[in-house]
Amino acid sequence: MMNNEDVFGIVLRLQDGGDTHQKEMWGMLENFPAGILVDKKFISEELFRRAPSNDIYSTQRRETDEVVFSSGIDEQGYTTGDIIRFNIPNKDVKINQSVNNIIKPSHSSFVYKEKYGVKNNEECGRASARQTVCRVVAGALAKQFLQKLGIGITAETVSMACASLEGDTMGAKVRCTIHNVPAGLGEPVYNKLSARLAFAMMSINAAKGFEIGEGFAAADMCGSEYNDTQNPDFSFNTNHDGGIQAGISNGQDIVFNVAFKPIPSLQMEQKTIDFDGNPITYKASNRNDRCVVPRVLPVVEAMAALVIADFYLMNHQK
Image 1: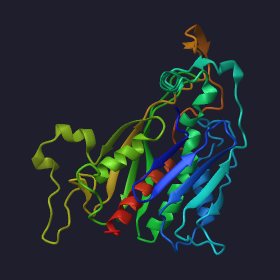
Image 2: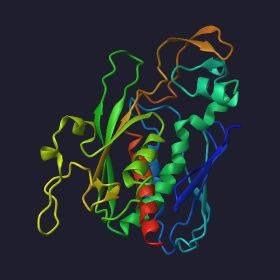
Image 3: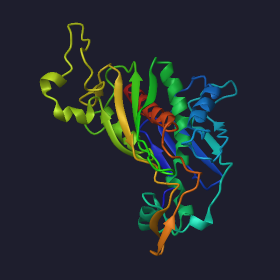
Image 4: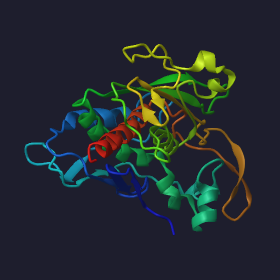
């Protein structure tokens, strides 16, 4: 049976639910530290970064993304240590019945049919990128906690494929840098910091690749050029490891890349089948993005913030 509620994190735990076709998205953030003054304007700004825009690559769906907090924050705006509960109403929900029965190429349509027995795309709403709005809210809170520790996170677009055909979509690569991370975050053997970051990034819609530091380029390097040697004061001469060694942060900037596939909803005709296996032609509407960037940048930052905050709290519970 399909799970409409998911949980991320070990100590700092985000549970969220709802989907793109329902009346709201909702989330619960457990074990967030007490006494943090919440800047709700900052949360709105982060949501605005994720929201659709007038960019030619952006969906024409329009959501206000007004987050409502119902617990965990007192009247003065400080976190209480209780579960932070929030919801975000969906204001622009539309179900296109004419394509509801189509197996959309490279979407969740077929695999949800096989795993859950769904019979139309309306039942696949949990797979929508709309879910990332909950990640951005929780990540904005985690960022504010990390800012108190001097830790900053920045994601940027490294490259974007050029789509030669009108109505086509594009893949992209995103780089994320996490500044001022203290050494010692990470839990060998299976909860390496690098492994948790990879897990977090690969949970984002359309993510298909992850590399940290030199990543795949390391396969073509010799150890003599790769190793991050140190000075008598323990400073590093290079950062080929991307700030993580043996799964534990070493105090340098953490740097990683995430590769995203082209969004599969093409505004051009594709041959496919319906849920009964009949051949059919499908063309997506303008309610779909043409590329994950720039909207995915705050999502990458949010997931990174949740991971770093989670490991920091783990270290300080010992």
